[in-house]
Every structure is written in structure tokens, then in C-alpha cells.
Image (cartoon, rainbow, N blue to C red):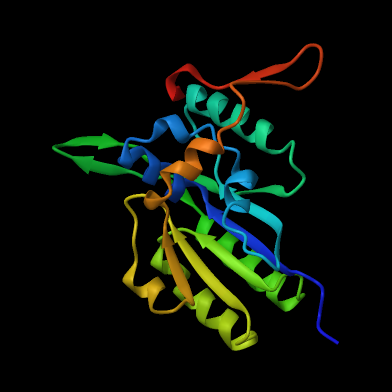
Length: 207
């Protein structure tokens, strides 16, 4: 008797790779995105979107932090959206005799790898989509394929992003810059009422 259960799909988003891809493309108007709705548009017949793991870190800049917080609160209204936080690491850089202290986002690739391997080990999904072009993920992809050769792994490259190494180690790739029409139809409402006292609004700089 044929299996009537749909194939469960998990999506793993490299939040900063995705954000900076949109930024480099000049697509800030798509920052206020309904993440689950967007990736449901790529789910095929016989599949179901199980969970979207959004891996990121909290910015140190207060204005950026507030915009990000509103975006996350809006998306967390959907139970299929799950946040996984990394962190920013302060570096010391000297240039022209002047010392700078830039911050570098850390742990996103590790958090994606851990979540991917754990879910494949627990057989909690049948197909994985990874939204990143970070080639540091290649070892995790190879391990996942060793654990379960039948498990399909696809990469959805953010705009202005690509990796030859990832392409050669996964089942297929999609370039998201070709799907602007999907971005357009998957924006969140400009204002989202959480309760009688709190309303989330799309940041003015994202409109």
C-alpha cells in the first residue's frame, strides 16, 4: 500500500547571509518578509513544511536591534518559525594606526549544522532546505549524507550569493534572486496587532 504521509521539509535559514544578500541586491523592501509563507511557496505536492529554523544573532546597534525584534515578533506568531541565536564577537583591528572594534557574527553555521544533523538523526524530517551560501557547511552536508543517503538536501542561495562547493555537495540549488514575484506576495502586513496595547509596524527604513 503506498505511503500517504507527506514528506516533511525543514528549512534552515542563515539569517545574516539572507539579510545581506537582500541588502546587496537593493531589496530592503523585502526585509519585512513572512518567512514561513515565503518558503511554503517552494513546497511541492506530496510535501509539507515542518519547521523553519532561522539562525541569527542580535545586533549590537540599538536601532538595528529594535527593527530585528519587530521582525522576529511578527514571524514568531507562526508556530512553524523557530529562532536560534548565535552571537557577535568583538574583534580588534588596526588600520592606519587607528584601532577599530568591529563585531563579527558567529555560530550561525554551527547552529545550522547541529540542527540539521540532529533532525536527520531523529528522523524528524525527510528533506532539508538550507538558505545560505556559506561553504563552511560542506562538512555537515557530507556527514548528513553519510547518515542517510536518501535524505534530500537542497540549497536556496540568497540574492547575490553562490557557492560552487555547496552546489557540488547537495541534490539541487535554487537562486532566490529569480523569485522576486514570490518575495512580493509574501510580505507581512505593514501593521500587525498583537493585542489591545501592542502593534508591530514595518520599520520606515524598510518600506
